[in-house]
Amino acid sequence: MAKVRVVNLLSTYNEKENVQPMVTTLEAIAVKLPQYEFVTLVVDSHSPDGTGQIVKDLAKTRKNLYLLETPRGLGISLLQGYQYALKELQAGIVIPNDCDFQWDPQLIPQMLAKMEQGYDVVVPSRHLKGGGDNFSAFRKLTHFISNDLFNYYWAGIREVKDLAGNFKVIRVKGILDQVPLEKLNVKGFVIQSTMIYELSKTGAKFVEIPAVYGERRAGEAKVGFNAQFIKDILETVKNATRIRLERSQQFFRFAVVGFAGYIINAIALQIFAEVMHLGESFAWLFSTELSIISNFTFNNLWTFKKHQIQGIGSLIKKFFHFNLTSLGALMIMTTAGTVGVKLLGEQYRQILLPFIIVFLVVPYNYFMYTRFIWRTKKK
Image (cartoon, rainbow, N blue to C red; front, side, top):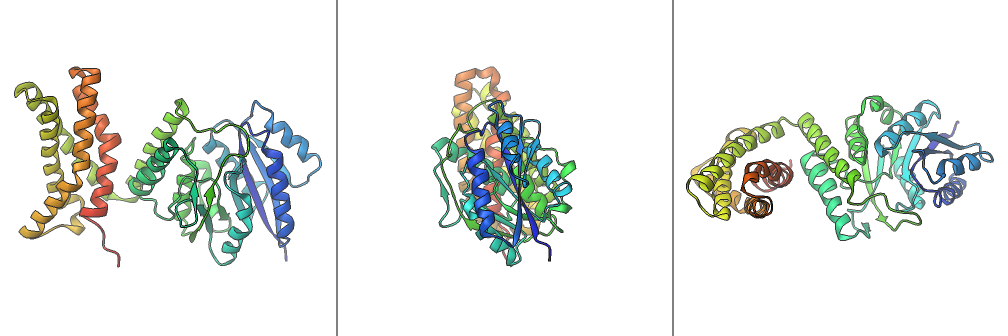
């Protein structure tokens, strides 16, 4: 019986200090799992530090080591790598990973054992008991915004809790070979949550195992507050919205109601600030409360119609709860709006409003609404 071919798919950019140790580590793991045939495919984005050349030199003495050079962009590289692994290397299982040892490759035997139990996608998770990370406060915040807020809650990708990691084990037959890789249009880190979503559409059976996302062994981290980071966040918002719209008409209705609330908010803000000459904080506070009342009414009648709150007593009780959960939105709007106007000037008041709503209030509100107000009861 032919062995199942496992392709270790390593995405690299400036990893000259890590690539050889990683290749050697994967070879040692392969020796312990003789029931599989292991191949390593390094997908390098023309690293200026010579990572690609190191792989070429290593490949001269290794028949199961391949190099694929791609344009820069994690999403672009991985998508091309997946396709190469399927079409050129005839992979039966693909294991994407980074080359910096932050995800421990020694988990591979445990992950393959899970696959032997019948799972199709095995994901190491920082969000299970026994897992974790050593992130700075900034990285924890960005991970929460991307992984939890936008991908898990906004996009509604719930198959696993850790949606941001590259490291996973994926079965090819009937799963990865059903994903339209050539049609996916993602360039950055959002490739990770996109792949989980696309794999879920194939009917894949998922499982997570606890894992610690450790320190980089060598080299410099790729994540920082720079232009690429901003692009990645914007792509995350765009992609999460696309998935949500594709998955659920409920979010479309939520967006329509939210837009109506925005119009009410904008008009009321103008009246309170320019006509009635209320203080800046009060203008933002009262206009936001009017939009909250509008949102509650129309979300209950239309967006969350299947979970509609009925009866005067229940409506009053839920409206009270709604206002409590909306305190966060109220504080976000009032604080961000007041500070923004003080920093930029009154002429930017109506420009600030949609940005505050889209990037701060909408994700917060959708999370609170679906978790606490119109929560779906589990069967």
